[in-house]
Length: 277
Image (tube, rainbow, N blue to C red; front, top):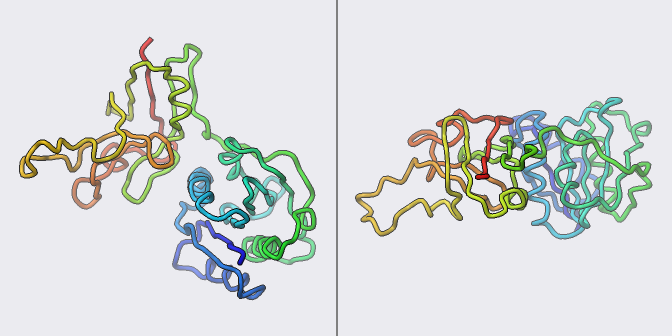
């Protein structure tokens, strides 16, 4: 049974996500549809790229991923279908795929060219869903598009390193449901610049000198529980996706707050790492 996933900025209120599912099931009731997220911040390509990069490889090989972010067709925003890591991705060529393609080379990319056969002002429904169903039935990418050899890059995807190699300047690319702040600094990249040196991490007026392995490492479990005051403490760690994350232990916006609210960190804000010389 073919699996088709949906990642969009449509939210839950409107009919859009439901209409796409209906169109897919109209093609075949045997397809399996999985919602990854419909809560991407509108038109936020960085956020969508982070979500799909960290979700897709939990699915079986051959899964088809529809990404409905900033998908209106225009001369600068063409539509593509990509085969990568034995998965298929259907989206606009607006940079969404560049985060995944930075780690894994695409096996094939086509620029979708079936628009003259389908009248639409809702391309995720009328174009992306049709392409997904075509692939799910075993169809090839060349039938729905012409082969191209590159995709559009995304801004602020890669952190900056100074010439002296003693500073990384990264950006916030995602804020999760707990208000944890995720940067574009991966563990692999961090360690390639660090080379064993000590470091300080700066986020606005906050400074960190230690990267924890997990959230609860900030707790001193030798202290009696009634004497602890750990909830609300700030920490840094590499998260489950191996990206540098700034968090508040047991964050809750209604009580102790979150890294985003307490530190005033928003998407694209800078986070700096200074290494000893």
